[in-house]
Length: 164
Image (cartoon, rainbow, N blue to C red):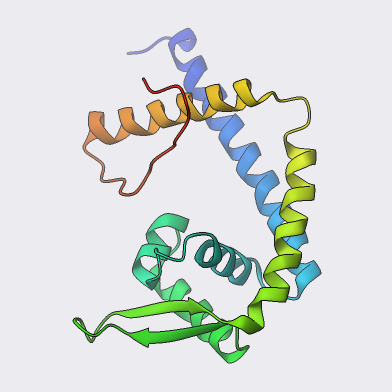
């Protein structure tokens, strides 16, 4: 049975992760409200804009950690607003590719500008080297969890200069 001291790193990690995620969720709520989208709509649209090669509902759901049903609902809403278009795959008729439409570009430009301004606030006092160290540590934690417990965590790749 682990003693209290051996659980301390897990406790710190859990509390820290929850606080960061809670703060980021609040930030996304604020940002999405300012552009007239739901939090989920903003995340899906921004993800598809940033990663156009990752253009299916299944892949989007996997990468954002949300259900495919929610992604499908959000995609329908974004299509209705004219921001996304679904195109059926030629080889697999069950698969649809999600394509960001020109109507979304002005909105995405505004979102991008707000991301940049927000990142300046979020990263204040954190050097590039410190951020790379953080990414490396998180990458190792994710890899250790994946390999150590056999969890499938596809597509997680953190690219920094310091390969270890």
